[in-house]
Length: 355
Image (cartoon, rainbow, N blue to C red; front, side, top):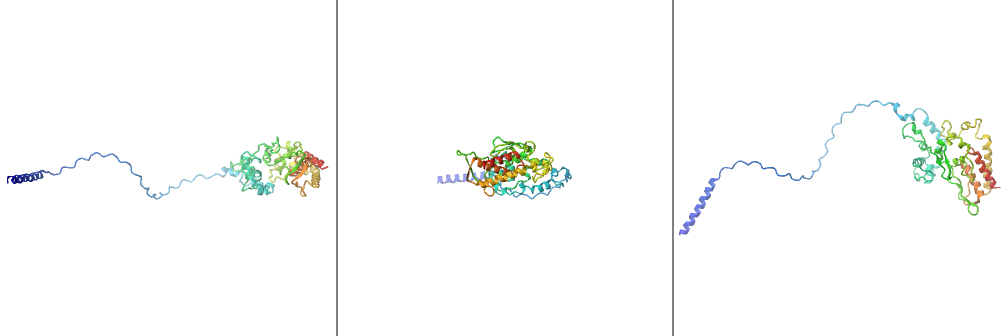
């Protein structure tokens, strides 16, 4: 009984204490000051770029520049109202260089392109090469020679572009120890030179004529003038030693004609009474000797009816020399004018070999 009263008393005291504590809670105090900021966290990844904005308005036009002065255009030094270009082109269109067709087959050959394609020739000269070591290969778009083949053209845009691409002395690649050095004609001799000399005889004293093209090649003018390249050697012609610019002096003349057809007027600088190229009858005499030797070589079975060598023919050294000399004279195409004395010596040796 007593125990029950004690428990009831304790319970009452607990309830009273709880109410007492509730009654003591006051009003909520003011908010405290903000604490210091924490450390900055790591930067987040860049977001996707937004679309480009609209173009801004055009700015104001600038002031007009000063009017140009035609007299300051260097182009007019060549491109003007004169016929300096059209006249040369008219000449060129009559020349073998301007009308020939050998570029169509030879310009695409690696061993021929340097001389048979205008652009390849320019590359060959620019590279310091020659026909025997030209590295450009065959030209897939071969062209005839043109202004750029020989002249600089549009390098400076002035009259200086009439300058030749080269006038350096030229070694004859096929003829050891021979160099051509006659001013502006040096350009020509990069190609107007023989590709071959006659093979030496074998142990039996014979020479084999290898093809219908056997001979120096169709550019033997320089060797003829120097008196070399045939089966016998001679001496340089006066047309080489006394003519400062060689080919150019006679084939262009004082008016720089670009047909390259020589005129008697060019001869009269030295041959004052000349009325034709047959000075002192030399062309007539040499022409008769050429005809005689050609006919004799056909009869001997060394040339065909069109005066081409017969490939595969085995000839004595003297007979082969006669064929070679004949081809050298034919491929020179001057009928003896370039070097009359050497031409006659080659013909005489050939005629004697057939006797």
